[in-house]
Image 1: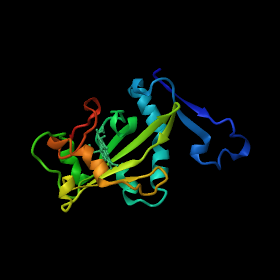
Image 2: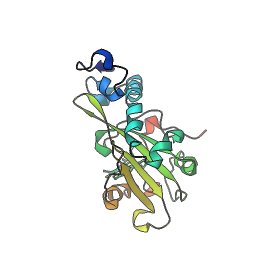
Image 3: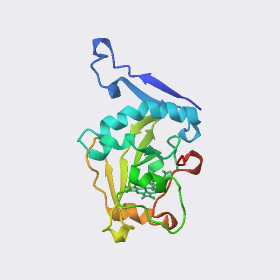
Length: 193
Ligand code: HEC
């Protein structure tokens, strides 16, 4: 199926409508196989999930969560590449990172120190969208074991996620001709203007 529906929770009634948080009012449902959603379907699904992500990630005052939506989107829309838990992913690059990142270069180069890449993730469970972690990579000058990337993540409830650098890095260093970056699926990549 190629569309999504917004279902209003049955338990939701009466004068509570305006006072209740968005998340209580509706779910973002995907019918059929979410790998088969067309572009318009993905856009509608993302629109439905968009505010929930920001509300969740910023709950505990995470500083990157508060600003990354103003950064440079790197893809036309969220896409499901498989790794990162079969989630829809959309990556944003800060201004330090954007020019180089948006070349999607392969070869012998290194991202500038201060580059920050942030990836939103949305899971689908039983046909319903769930906010996934916000994944972050920051280019530093003192982490040679990880190609000078510092990995972190914010949970959907806004708390820092406990992660091990090697868990993230062991997979990312496999992208050795891309300075450890995975890059979005080719068909959704945006290039710099
Ligand atoms: C099993 C392999 C794997 C693991 C483990 C993994 N990643 Fe990734 N990561 C990828 C792939 C593949 C992409 C590109 C996905 C896409 O956007 O389509 C990616 C993309 C990213 C990006 C966007 C920048 C880029 O590389 O293009 C960030 C940020 C990121 N990952 C952070 C993390 C963090 C933090 C962890 C650990 C909690 C982690 N990753 C663990 C495979 C992995």
